[in-house]
Amino acid sequence: MKTLVSSLLAAGILASGTAFALADTIVIAPEQQRVIHEYVVKQNPAPVVLPSDTAVEVGTVVPDSVEIRQLEVPDMQVHYDYMVVNGQTVLVDPQTRKIVQIIH
Image (tube, rainbow, N blue to C red; front, side, top):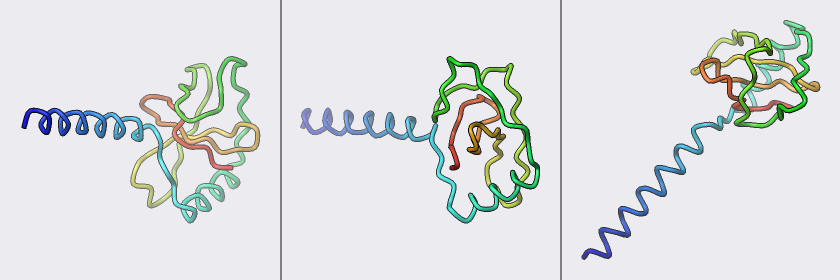
């Protein structure tokens, strides 16, 4: 019985850790990506040049010195900011400034 409880407890801890890791990554449906792309094209923001030590990848924290813009797209359930880097729209969590998705 102790082995079963220990196994269930370990599985629960592993599953919760996976959930936290997935929380940093979002997935925007293709239809919503099109809407976001059209919005960004219409806004025509200046491209952002990140410091050389800042990678453009999910989980990277964008330095405060880099300007990110509000993404004002209707029907978004969660609010994100964005920037354009190397021709890609990069979605950023406005509270943590972490990159959450890159739209190519």
